[in-house]
Length: 170
Image 1: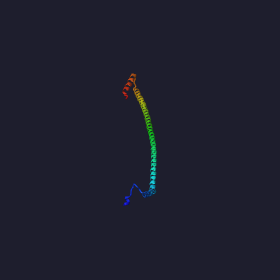
Image 2: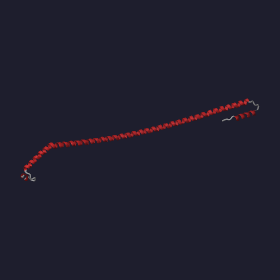
Image 3: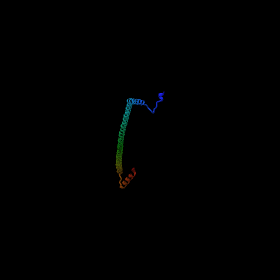
Image 4: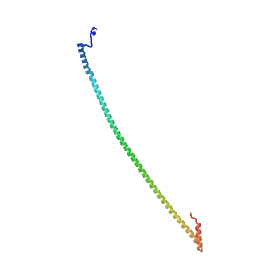
């Protein structure tokens, strides 16, 4: 115990200093050989993994930007196609409406012409019937006048007048 009582940290002895240095250098050599190299390698590997992850993230961002640009392009194209389809539909609608109006006008004109023709035909038929009726009446009157042989002309006129009064025209 006396030996420990004489020990002082502030005043190291040369033997202690020598052995402390030797042990420290041996420890440093062993640590560099077995600990520092694997730690340095794992740090280098980790750095490469981080760099690779950063590169992949950069590529992913670029892909996303490309996809977004492509999506915008597709959206613009879809908008253009929609506008073209709507324009075609509007043109078709206008064309169909114009065609329907034209057909309606043609049908209207055809019906008006047909009605005018029917009226004209009925008018001619009425005229023919009126002429036929007038002819028949004239023949009947002439027949009756001839049958009755009257000596006096005034009597013939009076008789013809009475026959005309008897015939009622509708």
